[in-house]
Length: 235
Image (cartoon, rainbow, N blue to C red; front, side, top):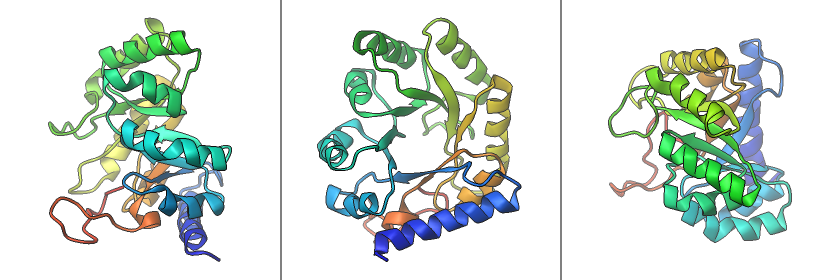
């Protein structure tokens, strides 16, 4: 078994255990492999091992590596999990199958206009700033239903779920529970939450998609320059 296959098996095993422990239907959680900052040569072994759902933070970075990989490996589902600027919407819709980061009416309208122009509609999730953190993107939890209603009624956007990134410090479970409640109230089936350090808890709270990067690809180097540095809830 290759290193990539072993890493996938370990995460899938942990997902299966979390589903069983929380009474979830086996296979009801999708692993989204967060491949941001990693080059095609790093990603390719995971594709060769059968992984097909990936997440990227930046349109330009994804555009530089994924078209070739998608040509080599059919059936890839690519999620945009980072902030999207309105001037990048056309490029994003050409590349991504799922947009997880709708957080404001202006962006929703730009996506709706591009869907009309291009005739291609990705699945769309609303990003919720579940911890109300000033430095993070996302709609305020109290405004979530208003944005969902606007997307549905005015823009006819295919909103299928919610996404969040809880605060790094503290217990993520209350935030996961809050997002699950918001999704249930809105009648949305998809809940994207949970990362390398906390995805079993997210599954117990109802996550349908968990975004895992460092547990698959290894820790990244960040601005402080310390190899292997990552927070407990990081992707």
